[in-house]
Image (cartoon, rainbow, N blue to C red; front, top):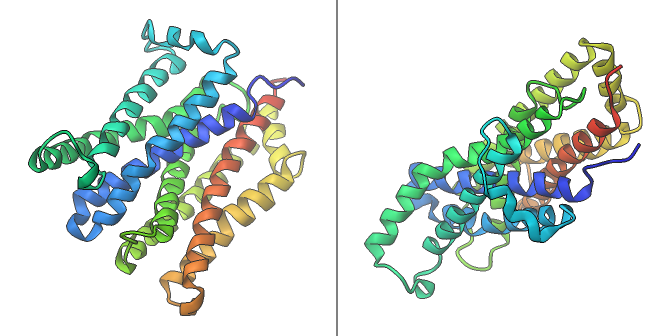
Length: 298
């Protein structure tokens, strides 16, 4: 079967979600963490524009006629997820670049006074979570609109939303840990790790609900979800997503929270668990995109 949406679309779906997750991590850290969470707020803000720029780049290339991409912005069709989603991504991207500038070290800020910049940070921190939720869930709504057995799952947009936030938190933890300057402190990483543990558990429950609901729905949906459990995509689902992408990082993060990791292994474990969460988030989109296209109604 010929696949219309390939790896480039998977990268786009993943990158948009990761940016949305990093942005909302930055916003909430700034609004509710105050000075204690300035480091992770900055890391999240500085990360955000890059994944979504990569995603938009590969999306434009995937169109086949990349110089015609502007046609997406000539109209706004609220009934079309592709149309309103394109506008949502565009607005989010512009604001993320502005937010990126506001969080740069002062020596790189050549426009605006400190008080004005702080007001701008606070305003965007209040606006961007709504855009982030829209961007993170829109990718699931886009697949929902295609009406295929796997993509027809009502909880799919929520799964993409939770997965996006989890990968965003993990990306902030990863970069904050690797950062050679203003490295995040233990308290900041501890709170982010707790948040990610909760998100991973919620993601596991959502995947379970989606599969159970699919298996007990129509024959077409039952067969389609069966391909994830014991069919062509089973090894990706069980090994790359459930094993390496969910259970292993959940175990590592839980051990970190319980102080069960020796001090000398704390840094490698934090990096590994964060990377695995991001790795698993990519393959969640991969398997849903590909398996959805190989399934059909009968």
